[in-house]
Length: 250
Length: 179
Image (tube, rainbow over all chains, first blue to last red; front, top):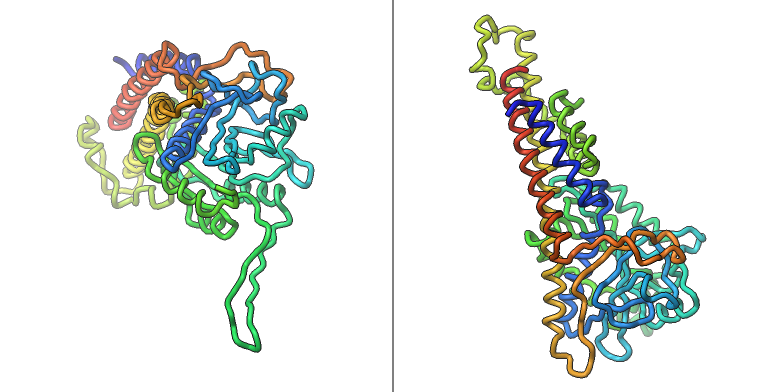
């Protein structure tokens, strides 16, 4: 085979690839996001949760439809054609929804896409019943998921962008720590406040240490080199972190 | 600067529509540290051993330039190899992993008694979702279903990997030959 023939064969194979997997060829595939969501759901089952896949009206589905592009919460009026989501439940007061690519509206009014979010189910049902729209309610966990070449390192800008989104969703974050004492005798420290969603940056690539430092300081966590079949271990760490840190009633 | 021979491969991928692969390679190349550039005294002279050019003199700086250029090209080609193969492997693993996760969810919840359990056998991506009003239910692309669509996708990935490896090997030989 000559050089030219090898390049022609490459061109033909690239065309076939782009035809069969057009989104993947453009770098807009959703398979990584879908895999992370399903893998986390599996791990939550091992923690005593039940997981259901439902349409926008709450009916169980055999085919789970996911958003390709960022989109608001759908109405419950067209369950046959709207995106679905997962519902996780541990007990009657612990019911949450997992959504891929849902639009959130920040305090500024700007719309943001979050790759994977976990939100309270009751508020989700109410929004769908009201006709849908961007999510403005409380968010337990927000995931930024990046399926990049595993040998590359994600730019710090991705961590900064996630921080910016989190700030717009929850600009009034308050953390108060109070030292309590009686007649100069310390009795201990108390902390309370209102916090935003727990932030997760999960990627198949590497991360720069500054990205991890930035997110950990801002109620977040990073997980690098998370790859199907090759390195799925960090997913269990994510679930442990969610159960420990998310301000949801697990 | 990307070596012209490596650039030719990337241009071929781009012409075929595999834009994401080109971007993955470009990211790797742009992230290469200055240390990745071989020092003048560390140029791999083996690459020039088979040349017919008996008049070449390794002693002068001008004569070392083709060697340095070739060494840089080979490093760029290696980085491109790694990026392309990594990208394709992850996509292949995702196609295989999603049905496994679905099956595990179904099986782990098969004994939920009166409740419905987890029923999903496939995951689809909606084509039009900029606006909920645009959902029409048609033209959905399937991911995660081990059916014809996945087999074809896996086959396309394998074919592209093999074609890349062949073209890359030809390019490596061209660099070695000083072409």
